[in-house]
Amino acid sequence: MRTPRFTDATLLAGATFAMLAWSLLAHTTLASLAGIGVALWFPASVRLYAVLLHWLPVASGVRTHADYVPPSQQQQHELVAGCLLTAACTLTLLIYTPPSEALACGIALNFANLLAQFDRREGWLPNAILMPMLLCGLLAGAGLGYPGNAITGACTAWILGGAGLFALSISLRGNFMSGADALLLCACGAWVGFGGIWAFLLFAGCGLWGVWAVRRTTRTPMVQVAPNAALRPVWRYPLAIPCALGLLPVFLLRSTPLLPHWAQTLLGG
Image (tube, rainbow, N blue to C red; front, side, top):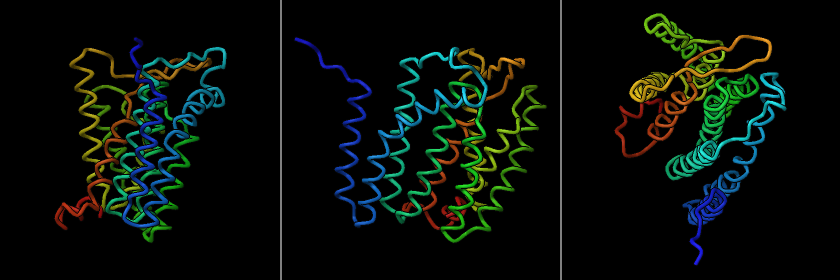
């Protein structure tokens, strides 16, 4: 008797069905429609991100198509898990936040997930994703009624985050800071706004320390290399995963009714 295998395709189908079932039970029609959109976007995002991870480095001149190495099974699992976590968090936000705000946070988490996948696999952050993430953050702030808050948050994150990375580079004698890292912090600041920038920097800093501690404990190198045919390898510390870990709790906690008002204020709610 053949033992059934639990594959990524099985997970995609099962998770999509569960999300669709949840959406039909949503408390409002708008939340239900938004949930259906998130459920359908989940399998599509896995395919789209796989294409971008394949072709964007080629289009950017980081490597040639002949140098492409198919992703390992672990990398495929990481991609599916990241997209599933993004979709699940967006559905969670639909429970206690307006659909427009929940979908805006979902867009930010999708950008963060894609950048984390690039940082994990390729060791670099493409401007073709960073610039749209920043622009969408500013447009979302304007659309939700707080354009000044988004602009101030972006500027504050760029200044404070850049200063923090510069200090880490000096104290730990490593390359924590790059133009792409500063742009990533600026984009995240636009999404969380000035009110949530302090909590975001705290969570992102804890995430960066956690990644560094795990790598040091397991004695594996923390730096990643972004190969280029014409230049020497560039060694840098990965920042996309800590930034994604910084965005996630801010989005999930700042509007939850379980927290007191002063805690929501500290998170930018």
